Image (cartoon, rainbow, N blue to C red; front, side, top):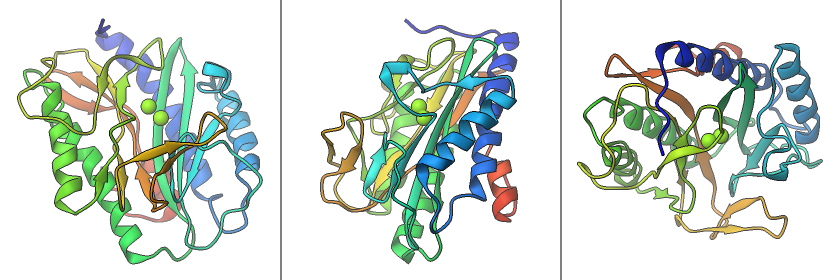
Length: 261
Ligand code: MG
Ligand code: MG
């Protein structure tokens, strides 16, 4: 069952999403060669609590951490450990918050030092996929339009679209209906309506789209060991159009990237 949100609820959700946006912005300066994921996790938890929010993932489904940090061939759900980042790594950081009783959930893939050109291209295209999907999140469109836009863009660049993990509705629960696959057919699926709030999160791979789960019960890796990228925003339909509640502005500011979204 889809829980549609009022404009007032969407404003509360924006505050929850921005807690995560600011946290990812703080982390942007910390993701560098030699940094320890476990230490970033502690910093992020403090930073979230300092904003009067609580970590959204920690404790949910027995998740042990505030962040999920997925390096190179890890697509998503990497648990923060002690192995330092190395030059050339790509690092997806997924973070959740709870504020005002609502969840925020968003993610960005960072580069450590000098990254291979084809991997840089994977990151750029995955971020573009996110915005292509968001663009379709309009009242009257169908869920398949969002999914198709993401798949089409990724595959047109020769990249793989992970099937086994999907985006989702978000609200008072982290994972609400509907599921939002990153692949699908135009004009199919649920009709999109005012007040829908989705976490849209393309997970795109350099090689095969197939994934495997490690024995820790969390980590999802590409089956061929090639890198993956993951970008996520929380998006609402307001006045029929997509409104992005989270932002990468804090990250772009920290990294000195011109802000254009
Ligand atoms: Mg997430
Ligand atoms: Mg999510």
